[in-house]
Structures are given as structure tokens and as C-alpha cells.
Image (cartoon, rainbow, N blue to C red):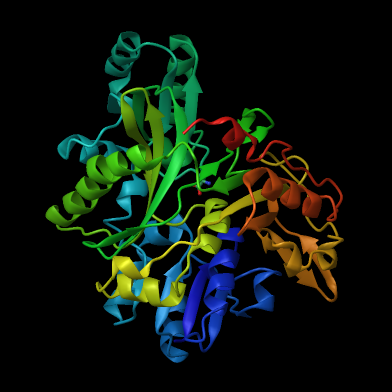
Length: 429
Ligand code: GLY
């Protein structure tokens, strides 16, 4: 198969890394890619949102399968455009991608299909009075979410009702998140442990992948600002067998069936953000693609030909039994630029990548990098995802091996959290 991967981050690097291992992969392209992906795939200078150009490229190069990484492209309708041109593409179409691109769509969908989630209401600018009354009726903390896509930053957890009103006004009046915040969801905060549950689905059949836990905050101990994710590990021990069975029965099956029954079957990677509460698993949010950095830990654990699996899902012919998992674990530590998630500088030389050897069981997935001659430079907030895969060792050793690789890599302003994966060591299953 000729394969095109759309995107330029660590997630897309992990997808290309796995695709490259398959003898079925003929030519592998990535648009636009980064300095790590260019070791595996032919880079195509087309941005992920330039849909018409991507379609033209796929037709010209006889691409058999396109895999879309970023949610923005899915929300823009990349899948609709590829399908209209008879091209196989892995990901949901624009309507199905609303599970992620509209928090209101997702919450109303869950209500329609009795899928467990927190109590909520949605509001627009003209509803400030009723929003204020709803805030008054909720216990604190209160969650205020922008309806649209906001790069993981459109969620504000408010410890007081006053803060919740301020958050609401920042979104609907001050347009802190642009049009994404023109409508908002206000919801009850759920207490528990967060985890991510991934399934590949062809709209009807589905295959669960490893579960994972992301580390969203910038500082150790889950403090500080929200980021796109500072590290992840898989599997997440909090999602034990009992929880898995409940997630499949109470969330995954009703979601896939519900989307089909509404005439918008979801094809792609359904990423369910979960809260494991005292009452059982509940949905925090849906995402409509692989997570980043979760992809960097769940993809290495797939014991199957990823290209074949994603092609069969894209063509509505998924055989769930073919999607086996390695009995292994993985830990990814994100190295970011000084200042991230606020402003940061780019163009810093990265040293030490040559000291990481595959025999260490470590792969460095590039997130924001670019090549200039022989140099690799930083080119984003999140720069690298240093990933250790423990095929036959315990979590503690895998964490240690990821950190010892991180210590070998340097660039000016490099920052990483020191506690990735530590939480999993304390969770009782
Ligand atoms: N790591 C969170 C996300 O991919 O949305």
C-alpha cells in the first residue's frame, strides 16, 4: 500500500514508525511531517488543513490509504473530501467528528443515548442569566468548556461560582477562545482518576487498544497550566478488567451504535476521555483521533500490521480479532520549549539524539522539530516525546529507562516533568 499520514507531530511520527515496520507498506508519505518523520517517510510540503491539495496529491501518487492525525483537519471535513474522490481514508467524516469538535453535540448525544457523563447545560451569549442560575445550582468545583476546538485549552475548572461566572464571560463576551467559545457547556466536576480509552472502529465493529494516562498539566504533581500533554503511559492500571468491561458495555457500544443509528457512523479512532468515579466510568470528553502523546505509548503496543488494520476500518471491514496487543508497557516523556504552553522560542539546536540507540528500548518521537542542514532544531512548544517500551520489564524500570534517555538529550530551555508514570506505581487495581 502507498500510505499518506497527515500531520506533523509526535502522534504522526508514531503512526509512521509503525507503518514503516510493515512489509505491506510500499511508499510512505507524511504531510507536512517533521525532522524525525523524514527518516521514515517522504515529506510532502502540504499543511494538514490544505485539504484540496492533499486530495490532489493522494490522487497523483495513487495513495491507497490516508491516515489523518489532527482533529482540525477532521473537523474541516478532510474525510468527506477524500471519500468524494474515491480515496480510502482513516478518520471520521465532518459530521461524526462533531463528537470532538462540538462539546455541546457530544453532551447532547450522550444524553440521548444514556451514556454516563456529568450533569450539564449548554449556553450561548444571550443566556447569561440562565447560565448564572445553573452555576448557582451546582456544587463547586464547576467546569466551563468552550464548545469548539481550542487545542486542549478550552476547559476551565473553577473552584468558586464567581470564577465560573468569570470563565463564562471570558468565553462568551471576551472571546478568549474565539468562535470556539461562542457557546459553552457548564458541567458538574467529576471526582476520580482520569484515563483514556481508545478503540479502532469501522462504524460497527470495534477493537480496543491499550488504555493510557496523559499528564495534561505543565508542572509535576498535576499543577500549573493545561498543555497538550506532557507525557503518557500505557496501559493505565486504573482501567482494570471490571472497568474495561463497563466502559465497553456502558460507553463504547452505545456510542458506536448511537452514531450509526443517527446516520453518522463513526469510523476511525474513538478516544474516550474517562473519569473513573465512585459510581463507575463516565465520559469526560470524546476525541475523534489518536491522542498526542498517547499515540506514542499505545501504538508501540499494537501487535498487528497498523496499515492493514486502519485500511480495514476505513473500508468498513474491520476484524477485531486481528488487532492483538503486546503484553508490554510504554512511557513517553515530552520535552518542551521553555515557556510552553505560553510563548516560547524556537530554532534551538537539539543535541544528543544520536546517543539514543534502539537496543535501549527507547524511541524518540519528534513533535516540533525541523532540519537545517545537519542540524535538528526545535520548532514547536512540544519538541520530543522520548518513549521507552518495556516488553519484558516492569513499569518502574521502563520509567527509569525513559528518563535516562531524556538526560542524554539537550537543547536550550528544554523542560520536562519529573513524575511521568509515577502515579501508576501507586494505583491499586
Ligand atoms: N493528549 C490529549 C489529546 O490528544 O487530546
